[in-house]
Image 1 (cartoon, rainbow, N blue to C red):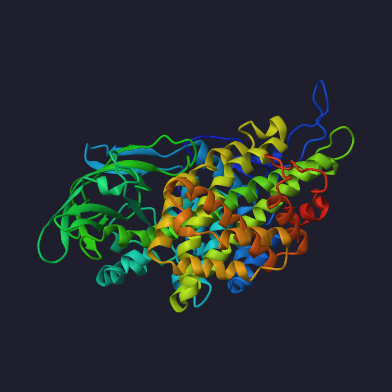
Image 2 (image 1 turned 90 degrees about the vertical axis):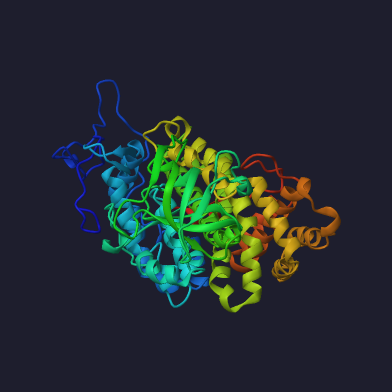
Length: 581
C-alpha cells in the first residue's frame, strides 16, 4: 500500500532492496551482506546514507524556511524529511528510474487510449508528494505559501526529480487558470485537493488532478512565434478545436494541458482537458515518449491535436503573456530543484568522506578534500538562500510593488545561475566518491544525468539571460528594486562592496545587449548571493563566500584556492553535514 492507501500493482522489474524491504516475498533483512569473503574482508566502506531526516538535519534549510515565513510548516516538513530520507523511499526512486514509463497508445481491443504505464513506485512517489501539499499549499496557506511549497519541493527532489515535474506544473498553473474565472472555479479546487488519483477518467470523478503544459513545436522550440498549431472556434462561448503538434509535452498523463495555438487574433493560450465535457476522450494523441538523458521516471512526450476540444484562457492574441505566469512558477521550481540536487549530491559526498579512510585519516580530514567539500557547501547554501528569497518575493508580491519587481527580475537571474552551476557541482561531488560514485549502484549517476535539465527546461541559458534584459527594458523599476536590495548589504565585506559598485554603476543602456547578457546576469547573481548571505548566514558562510567568489585569486575548479584563501573547512562541513542537527 502507498501512503495514499492506493493499492498499486506488482513491480514490473525486480531489484534488490535494502534491509527491511520485501522482494518476491523474501525479507531482505534476512539477506545481510557478508563482510567476510573467501579472499578478503570488506572494510573501509561507507554505510548507505539512509534513515536520515532530509529536513531536520539540514541546518541551512531550516533557517531559510523560518526567515522566509514558512516556520508554521516545520512539523510537516520534518515528517516528510524522515520519509524522503528513509531506505524505502530512496528505493522507490531507484526502481522508478530503472523502469521508465511505457506508452500504451491502444488498449487490448484496439481502441486509442494514449496512456503512459508507470512503475508502481512512481505512483507511490506521486502520492507522497501531492498528499504532502506540494502542489496546493501555495494557494491554500494563509501566509508563506510559496516558501512552504519551495521547501516541500526541495525535500521531495532529494527522493526523485522526475515526479517533481508534474508537481511543479500542477502548482504553477493556478495564476494562468485565473485569467479565465469560470475555468478556475471548476479546476482550481481539483488542483488544490492535495490528493493523488492516477486513474485516467474524467476529472470530475477524481479525488485530485495534475495539470501539464505543451508550448514548443519542432520548427521553433523556444521561439513560440513560429508555432503552427491552429485553434478553430466552435461558437461564441470560448470553445475551440486544436489541430497541430507539440514537440515537448511534459507529463502527458496529466488531466489537462495549458497550451498555445494560433487564432485569427494571434497566438493564444488554451486549456485542453484529457476528457471532453461529454465524457469522451479528447483527441490528444501521444506520438511517442521521449528517451531522455535523465528524468527517467517521468514521461515527456510528443503529442498531436486532432481537433482536440479546448477552452481559450485569457485574451485572444495574448497567449504568451497569459501562460508566462505559469512559466514564472516553474522557473522558481527549476532553481529550487537544482539546489536540491546539489544538496543530495553534497550529502552523499560528505557522508562518504566522513566514513572512508585513505592513507590513514578519514577523507574529510585531508586538507585538499576538506577544501573541496567546504567550497561545495558554500555554493549550495548560496543557492538555497537565493532560491528562498525568490519564493518570499512570490509570497509578498500581491501586496508589495517592491516584492513584485524582485520576483520579476530575480527569477530569471537565479534560474540561470543556479541551474548552470548544478552540473559541475554534482560532477565534483561524484568525484569525491571516486569510482564508487560512477557506478549505477550509487545515486550519483542519476543525480548527474538529472543535473542539466533545469537549465534547459523553461528557457535555456540564452533565453533566460535575454529575458532578464527584456524585463529591464520594459520596466526599469525592476532593476532599481534589485539594486536597492544590493545597497542594503554595503559595508559588510569589501569584496562584495566592489562587485555591488560595479553592477550598480553600470550604464545599462550602453553596456547591455545580447552579447553581454550572460556576463551581466552572472555578475548580478553573484552579487545578490553574497548580499543575501551577508544578511542571513553565519559569518563563516558569508565571509567564506565573499573571499572565494569575489576575489581574482580563485582557481577555475572547486576547492582551487590560492594561498590566503583557505576556508574554515571544518565549520562549513559540520554545518552542511547530513547528520547536523
